[in-house]
Image 1: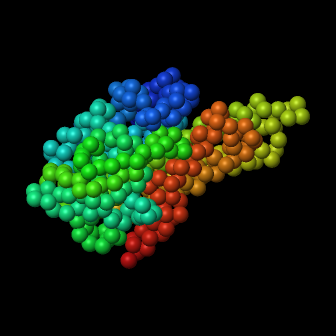
Image 2: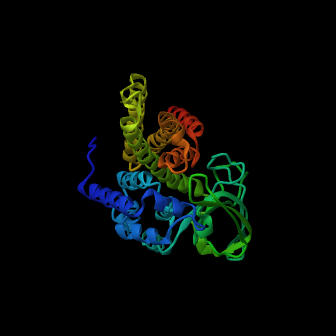
Length: 380
């Protein structure tokens, strides 16, 4: 396997890293993350102009890259800057449309790429506990269209989304894989009710209630009742993105901690000269390299055609970055001491984000169990 990025990917990463360093320094990021909208429309537009959104999609739907390593490069840079703009929603919704959409639906991806439409996935529900096929929201035929009723939880940037990808059950029990359908719903559709809130790691999310939301027949994405496979495909890209974002955050936490160990003195010498702290830092560096290997493996596997191998690599990466990200957060704060918990120090914000990534799209326990189940499925 070639571990060297192409020139195009290196140039994209350099452009993103430069923009984040110059325009998205920690002070600016903190103001954006705590703002009423939870992100900056100005920075969102500028990031789209750089090509950060176009790199998430293949050429046949209007992007210019779209391979696993392209997505990993973008999200690793976003992780370095703790970027809160709604990239994950664009990736999840756009990939689902690219997978199963009609020609007319695929034309809407252009608005995701240029940043003019903010999208969000409305799939998780209260009590679903990461189970991708547990969907209680119902969709019933209504004339030529559909009527949706139910509730969705933790919709990232839901209040600002103008396009929602909503999962709803058209037949079957709440936990059946069969019978899940996907619908493209305008964010301002009558019957949608939002309860927004600020997230602990910056930005905003919302709880969504659907009460008699009516959509036309053209809102159905893919075949009726066959949404589970499309969801798995889209969520796979989300797992890769979150793993790469976590890796970027780990790199910054590691860099800042190494610098602190060099400059912080006790008994007249840098604390980095103490052997006990050197051993702890060396162990941490090995863990981060293991996380990088897991991300590389997932990025290589996601473009492959064999489902079990692909999904195992993605769950392995999510498990790894969940476990390692939490350890990096804990160790870096302990190596800093009390100052590591202060609001003014960026490290505390990186630590929160690393911990919270573990809980997006399934935590480490969920993906360890999923990895085992996939392995058993492969030998049956």
